Amino acid sequence: MSSDPEGPATTPTESIAESERHATWLELFFDLVAVVGIAQLAHLLHDDPDRGDLGLYCLLFLAFWTAWMCFTTYGNVAAGKAHTRTILLGMFGLAVMAAAVPEIESDHGRAFALAYVLVRFLASRVWQARGEVVVDWPTAQLTAGVVPWLVSLWAETPTRYWLWAAGLAIDLGLTFVLSRNRLLNRATEEWQDQHGKRERPSRTRPVAARFDPRHLDERLGLFTLIVIGESVALTVEAASEAEWDGRLGTLAVGSFVLLLALWALAVRRACGVPLLGFGVLAPRFALPLHCLATGALAALAASLGGAMEHAEGPLPANVRWLMCGSIAVFLAVGLLGGALSGRGLRWILAVGVPVVAAPVVLAAATSGGYPGALVWILVVVARWPWFYDKRVVRAPVSDRHT
Image (tube, rainbow, N blue to C red):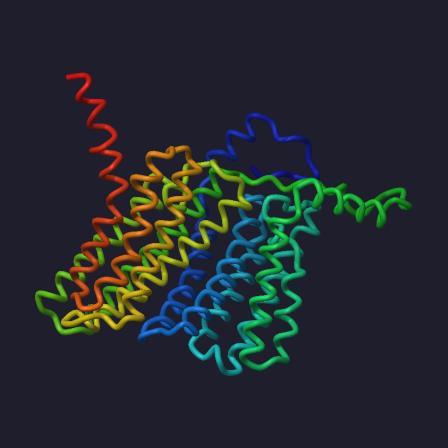
């Protein structure tokens, strides 16, 4: 729910209108540009990635997602008062970051860092003009974590990457350490220091920015949906370049069904976070889960694309672990989402823990198998929550009424 610092409290009619908001065309355009960058990142994991490639992917994905979330927060709170020019400038910054990814280890890394710094400062400035404090996602407003990125403009790799990681760690740390009251009290004290001696303050007293939860859930779900769509596109591209035969067909169909299964967990009845109910968690706790889940999806897309090149034989160990590991991370988020949504201990033991453990076991035990078989086993794992809910839980209930 958004707030207007210059107007009265929101009326019931306004609340109803806000709850019926949907993502605008501009917001969808912004999401598509962000996912272009994520597709670029997925290529970092394409050719038998090692730990260094995976670490760089995680670092850059978190930066992309953070930049995207800063402007998503602005659009959610400002609603119809969001400035188109501001969002378009942020979009251009994300496009520069995406273009820098393929040569990130060269001087393009500086361009990536500079674009990130400018995007973050731009996102922070809008809250000063609005007189609001983003108490539910302070990263959108605070810029302490941007300082290491600014310093990295004069650093070389790998020092540059460590500075980026430090900046992102600061952002995450402040998000969980600073409470709502502390953020608002600090902003109020600064306002009083600046305007206490003036008869007519130039700014209104700071107030807490209010999220529109339904609109935020929709934006998170749409972003996850677009990432899944991009995953399908990457898989199709890889399959189109491979030699078509029965094993490739088995792998390709299995990959598509697997992505559909993950879509059902994260989007069909959830807010973009697998098995997490709508409005269950406050934004500062739900958003990191969304980042983790979408990052795992994009990594899975890279592994499925890599598998297409090895449809006739065993997967390289790194590709196999990337595939199974990304599924395990995604389903681990689902375990947390389901538990926090009140599914109970029985569900955790019968569904949540097994679906997380199974991909890890498969990665360790299927070194000689064909990719198609592995993918179809992962489909069964991903569909187990649905089967449990439909057959194991509901069947006894229907039996009692027969």
